[in-house]
Length: 376
Image 1 (cartoon, rainbow, N blue to C red):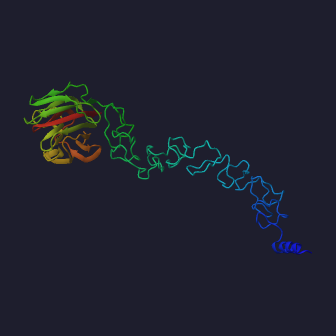
Image 2 (image 1 turned 90 degrees about the vertical axis):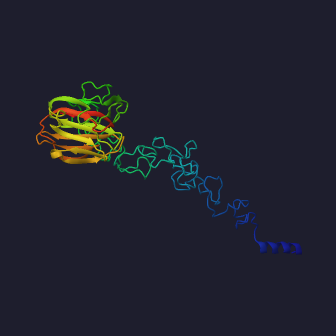
Image 3 (image 1 turned 90 degrees about the horizontal axis):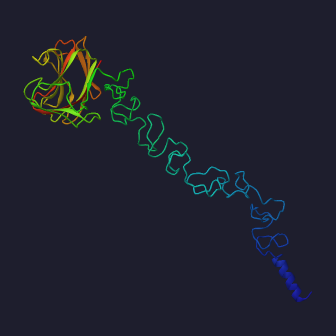
């Protein structure tokens, strides 16, 4: 053997068979010695068109991520959450359904709010800005700050007990208002009609008797409880019963309601007197004697000139007064703004029926009256 041949042989013995791609497999054993990723025992890469493991029996098409969709139709066979027909996941940055036309931020429940801001995009009753529903145990407006039991109309009655929590004129304990179409007291058994009513919306004082010329009488544009007009008695100071009055033919109403407001808490004003046939002529024969006194109180004068305070009042604020009358026992209950304040107040005198209603100021004052209702 020549010296050159000996050197070649020694090099072959020392270095072994050639491995061009340095993948640890000689060219004779490697099915592609120019690609280090291809050699016997390599992991088959699905759908790459290469016999990675040098085994033709290993399929190139399969399901690499276990989502039951083969790599040749899967848009991402390394992510089991992405395959044709998958449900798109909101705002995850993944094309879950393998459809580029499907937005990543969508509105699944059709409530107008996209899934990235909707607290429950599978329930159209839950969306930011929705009206909270009463006591349904659902966060309708997507705000944990909104209570599930509330008083939307601020009438003092929670929605669980209010028959209409969107109308402050309807709540249990309120007085029915004549012919207003509302169920004011949340009791369908209560008639909406009454035996007499005046809200002064006709703009005049038809039927009223003017007892004195010491007033400026006006039906003006200041109304209570959504009305546009009321009667203003501006004046007084000449004595009791000197305002205006309405005559009745011996009624025994179950209740009388009205609204009243006065311009000052430092006067004796806003008198409402329910009496018999002699009331006003000599100061007797009065069943109910109500006034807004000079110390800011709604006061009732009962039997024996006994004083009863129903509540405090403020200047230029409307108050809804309800008188529940018992003509047999000759006593009454007083409600202010739908809240019972006094019970079993004795009539001031022995009166068996309503013959006269007086409105006046004892001192010089400015007082409005509105929506006077007499119920059967």
